[in-house]
Image (cartoon, rainbow, N blue to C red; front, side, top):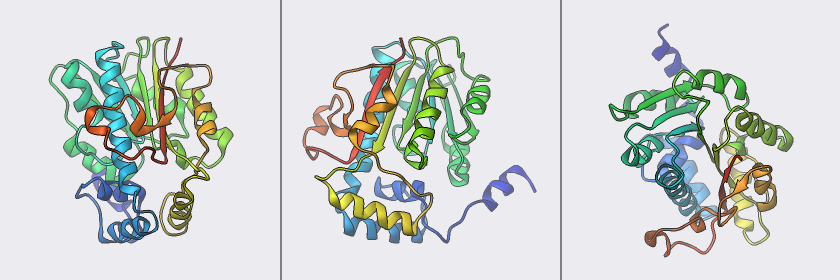
Length: 268
């Protein structure tokens, strides 16, 4: 069996999957009817869920723009890439720094199929894709070093991915181990679904997802999300609702808060 055939064989189109539902909510076309049906059921439980997906995507763009344009970062390690969409990490970074290097990491077979076909970078820069699991940080760093210079600052992008590590201490440990392999001047960009008494409908939607979809996800409180940045210098405005992290004018009409929190921290 060829590598491509082996990857295709891993794709399960009979059960909804988070990457494909996220793609559906953000207007993409890389999903199956089962994903659309589950996405519609979740949206019925929580009508604002599509806003979270868009807020997270726009947060990614603003964070990458800041790091490439103002912080001088030209290397990005994007773990838990998800399906390609508009303004992927390499597109945002290489518009500002054509020589930027980006490594995408995911273990979802459908993501890998589309990443190979769609995620192409500038001639001056480099873009690579790894089939690897977040729970194996040392293996990720070892493979990423084939493309990235790990003696120079790297932006570690963990957008909506540590939610899939159920054990809290394990999830904090994975982030610490990844950051430990990156030099001073590197940054952590992280977003996470929260649980809050102000948003009970989110808990209901997550409970539905965990009974019907794959993989399971874990919510954490805003304070628990902030713990991922322990030991780092948090950039203003700290860990906040993603649509409130340095919003552009187009973001000002968004809801006051979404249940997706994010932040950016610098390693000293």
